[in-house]
Image 1 (cartoon, rainbow, N blue to C red):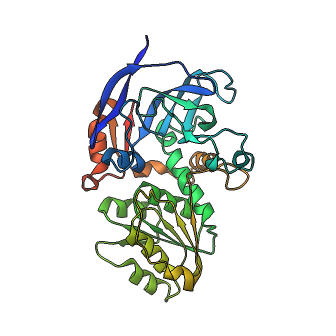
Image 2: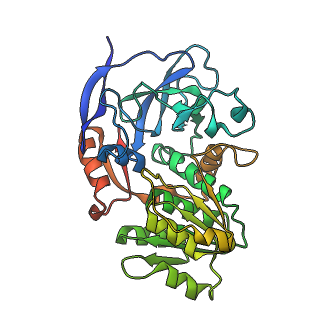
Image 3: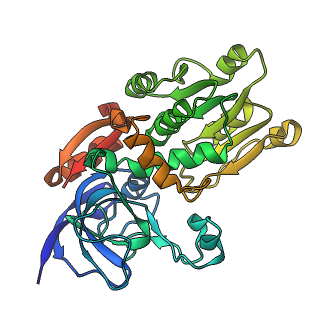
Length: 345
């Protein structure tokens, strides 16, 4: 029996390495030797118990690695291919898949559903979620394709153009990468809210025109002054709290666009009256799919390969696999200076 090490939750705030069986890939799947994986905000939701924990299988989806084995029917990748991994599988034949909206696939499952994910030496993934990486994209960059693709999708959903003022609520991984995409897209002006010094520093490095520290200033007052009372054309909300949702509605101009991309894990009490009288368009952004002629995932790879975005700027901490418990503790504590924490497998 072949075995491998996998990091598995064992309770609230607890994750550690176990020796588990390494299985061959089922039909339609591939086994990927993990090289680098990021700790996502959704992983922290599970870590804190907001979302479900698997106590039998490794989670993790911000993954880069090398294909080592493919299952029956897999033709899009082969052993030796370096790949980045989407966080879900799709069937390819339902109405949503056929129309480029595969993030709404009727048979969508977590990419490593009931199998080990990226927090393992070998991750088993559905082949539909695998994207080949060019040699010019490093393993660290490859593990950032997934969250960057979320930013690509969010800005596309917001319909942000070069003429727009874009605000991003929240300076975490997704917020910073939404900012990076907005800058790369050449929007007119950018603003981002942050809570921690490391977020402010990275936001400036990524090209933000205005950085609002919410511990020192009210974003509503800042936007009122910056726009002469008009408001922002586009607001992308990445935090997931009632205050942040209300701020997004308050700072968007009349008939502007608000895109929600946060991981909302509980109902919110929010003031919806502004939606009625200001008529902003409020929409969600669910992971990634097609936002044009190419997938959001491929667009993210191209942005990195073409050196239009350097997502590695947001990686503040790097740990070896044996220290994954420490990696999670640091990622969970923003007082540590963390933004994106990576684990080298």
